[in-house]
Image (cartoon, rainbow, N blue to C red; front, side, top):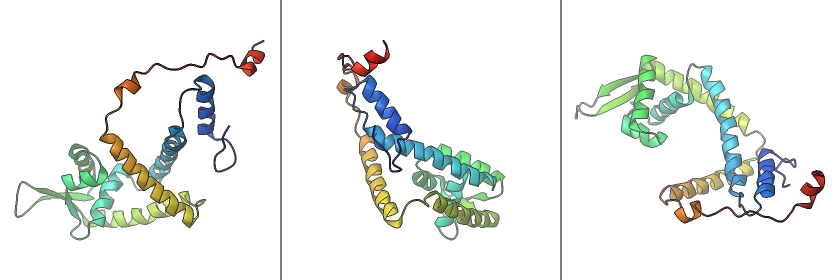
Length: 199
C-alpha cells in the first residue's frame, strides 16, 4: 500500500488498494489526485460553513458580497458579471441576490444610461459585513494551511492552476464512448493469499 505525505495510509490509499485487489487491470490512479482533492474540498467546505454561519451567511452569499466588495466603489455588478466570477448561472446569482437584498446587505438599481441593465450594489451595512467577514475568512484559511510551508503553498497553487486548465480542456472534450463501453478486464489468476484465507 502506498502512503500519503503523513507517512500513514489514508482513506484514498485504502480505496486504491481495494480496487487493485478487485480489478487489477483497472487504472484508478487518477483518484490519487482527484480523490484527495474531493476529500480536501469537503473538509474545506465544512470549515468555511462553520465560519460563515457565525455571521448568518453561507458560502454562496459571501461569494457575492466578496465579489462586489473587490470590484471597488461603487461596489456594484450586474448579475451576469457576478455569474461569470462565481461560475454559476445568472439564475443562481439571482437567488443569492434575493437573499442578500432581504437581509439589507445588497440593493438593486437600474443603470441610468440603459434602464434594461440592473446592478446589484452593496449597501453601507453590506460593505461593513463584507470587510468583517473577509478578515475572519482569511484568518480561517490561514489556519487551514498551517501545515504547509510557503514553498508548499506556491507549488500547490501552481499545480492547482494546471489542474483547472486540464479540467477546462476536459469540459471541451466529450468522453470516449468506445472507452466507456469497453468490457471490464478481470484477472482470473487465483490469489494465493485470498485462497489460503478462505480455507
